[in-house]
Every structure is written in structure tokens, then in C-alpha cells.
Image (cartoon, rainbow, N blue to C red; front, top):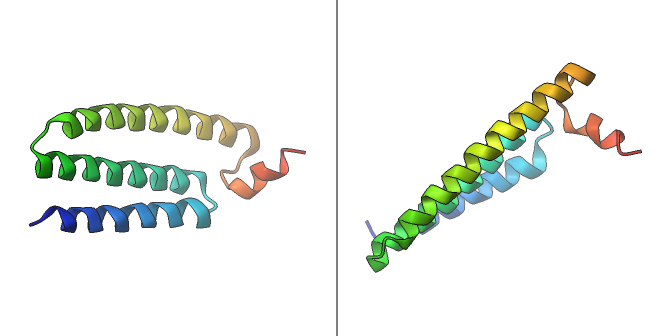
Length: 99
């Protein structure tokens, strides 16, 4: 398979993540959409590293995975705290809290 196939797959993954980010109201689904977008970036890094025979892209994947893990941990902790406080995880409710 050529690198273009991987780039097209990454584009589709990124678009699905963007759609989930913009269209969904559940905060957990929004966090999963962000994870999908980060994984599509990882796929681009790995495909480019394979295409150009450099390990730089694969090294960058480790940094992106670290950021994704931190985002998931902090995001889920915030969601749990908000759910305990207000009893809902719908993003429309939190938009009203801005005042």
C-alpha cells in the first residue's frame, strides 16, 4: 500500500473526529472524538516516517500518545467532577453556566 492510502484514511478519521466534536453534546463522546483526531495525526506521522525512511515521525507518535493519555485522564476527571456536582454530562448545560 502506498502512503496516499494511509493519508486518505487519516483524513477520513480526522473528519469523523471533527464531526463528533462539533455535532455531539455528550462530553464523553467529545473526548472520544478528540482521541480519534489525535490517532489520525499519529497515522500521518507513521505513514510519513515510512515513506521518507526517517524515525522522526515515529518518535513524534510517542509524544502525541502521551498528550492523548494526559488529555483522557484530566478530561475524564473533570467530567466525573462535573457529573457529581450537576448530575449531567451534556455540553449544552455547561454552556449555560457561563452566565
